[in-house]
Amino acid sequence: MRHKGIFFALFHNELEKLWAHRAYVLIVAFLIIVVGSSFLVYRSHQLSLQQAQTNMQQMEHQMGQLRQQERHASGQSKVEVRQALAADQQTLQQMKMQGPIINLKQETQQLRAQLKHVPSSQQGSILEQLAVAKGALKKGITQENSLTGLGLAGALFAGGTMLLFGLMTVGLTSDRFSSELEGGTWGVLLLHSPRRVPIFWAKLSASVVLLWAFMLSTALAILGVTGLLVGFGAPRFPVEVGMRLAAPTQPTLPVSIPPQSFHFISLLTYDVWALLLAMLSVSVLGAICVAVSLLTRSSVLSLIVGAVLVLSEVFAQIAAHWAGWIALVDPAVHLPLVADWTGSLAQSFNLADLTMKSGLTVLLAWGVIAVVAGMWAVRRIDL
Image 1 (cartoon, helix red, strand yellow):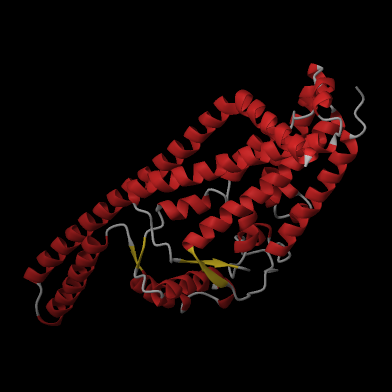
Image 2 (cartoon, helix red, strand yellow):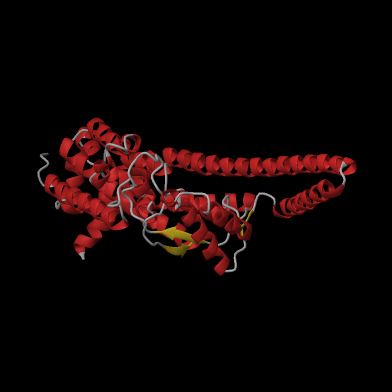
């Protein structure tokens, strides 16, 4: 019980120190992510409305030309013009009713028509979209608007934004021990806890909990703000997970991702899992940075190592066509862990081995190595 009391006291102390030194950065980052994301979504929504208005104006202009042709046409030609005019009139009514929202029944028909004109080797992405549309219709969802609070909250942890969360993790954890050694406060800290392992866990836990709180509050803020601006979306809308059917973006490359079946989860479930998986990945990255801080005993060096590790994900994405093997061992590539689950990471690197199982294996292996190395190094710090 005494050891638990020491740990919680250390944890509370570390949390207070982190907030005192990092509160300004966290608040600024929070505002940038929430305000920036909300502005982009609102701007995209307005552009969609403008595009829909432009399309309707073009359709009305086209109908005006058809009416002029009708006045001067006769016989079979006049019948054909009237048929085209009736079809355009129906399309215009649908556009006015629909606006920027996608009608899933119409999309299903269009996708089926596309399949007839596309080679089987390139049908993967169309089949995927068709499966999603059918899944939504089975749930009674007839319309889709991709610009919603729920969709963006999940996407926050599935793409490039995780690079920012990764760099924040480095900033919070890379000096947890090196700052104590450089500032000469390590000996004072040992007066509160002669056992060093609880200090290691307290520092790591405080950093991770603060990161989790930041990520959760960011997701909820984005959900609320964008939901008020453009709508919250349909919580039961299906999202596909598993190996994707899409072919590589470069048709000249061989298709190494075999078509496999995937299953659906609801949009709300997807958002929750995206957040939880992101929390797991930043926790592993935090453990790595804390271990590096212990091994190097230098805040600058550990910060550089952590930043290079996070940015290696960018280099791997750029060189995905020849450096795909990096994704099998680089933990930074798996920071958006939900991308392993949805199959988008496998599509980017053209590697069928990049699955949820492989991503978890890579991260957990690095996490174990970091924790073991950290506990080993903390016992060997000289006063």
